Image 1 (cartoon, one colour):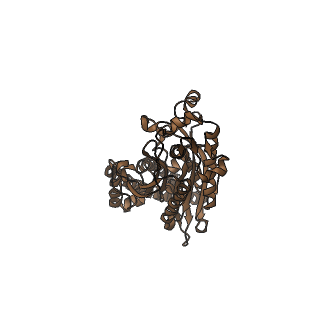
Image 2 (tube, rainbow, N blue to C red):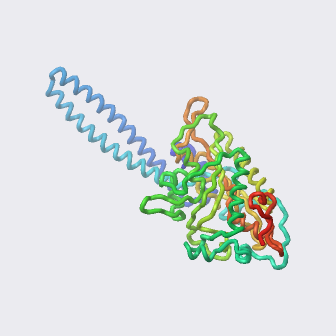
Image 3 (cartoon, rainbow, N blue to C red):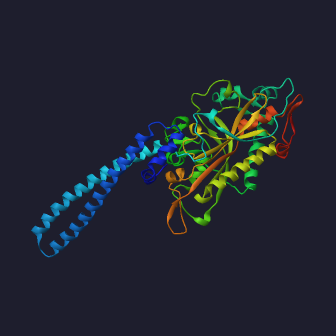
Length: 424
């Protein structure tokens, strides 16, 4: 969340950067925030003066009663009562106006970093890096949903029977490969200095607001109405909320965490051939990396995260590319995002398997996540996160790219985790 002070002091910059996002009605919302904030500050000043006057009169009443001047005391008491009514009204107006300002602030996305290119959608994203050779498959090569059926390793129909579309059942070597990927990702992240944590898979409303999923993505989250809780869309949410309402010290940085969780997304309106099989699910597994950083170091950390994910994809032997997201495709909370995509040879298309983002202080402001700087002043931290990695499309790419006429080879890096080198 942007701060009112930042918006007020940098209105032109905010509008310029929001234009990169194609954010509609930006100027009207910004003007309303600035106008209502001015009203709020004026009300706060009146409230402070009224409280000071009320305190002064209370002391005066006490002295008058003590000196026996009851009639004077009663007159002052009547005046004091009027001021207390005024204080009550001012406090009520202040709360209402402050709540309205907060609601408007929740509507505004993060301002993009200067590196974010203009654009409307994924077609305008910039390809900044590409590595790996696209394998040549045998003439009878199949997409992963056909391979899953052929080798009986993933049952999409059984998942539909149990729950509905988008909830597959992994079986036999498919389940073991899934578990192997989770363990491999966690080990790679731990070796890189990320502390593993296990977190709840259900969050409260405050946690969703803290990382920006609420109110922006409310319709995409599974809601447990009776308890007003939400199934997590990513481990980023509970892991980052470990630091909600926390005051850190400068020497606490960097803070690095990794976590495995299932993820739940309604993905309303998703349909068509591009979402077949594992391409888009309502429940899927993902290993996440999260960092809390000093503002001066957050972009160096973003580069480190990108390079870390590169090493994983190189070890898996998957051809991949990195895209810098344009303004129109940038997530609500992100200042800068790099997407990783792997090439699915059997589908002849690129599949997104990771997003790595710097949120700067946007989440920290919502979370009230601060640190004491060298001058002893409280300052907002920066938060970052990345998929390391999301399993469904990685698994799909492995099944498709490593298929042979005799079965599906297992990438060498995973064999010690699977205990087998071929699915046949």
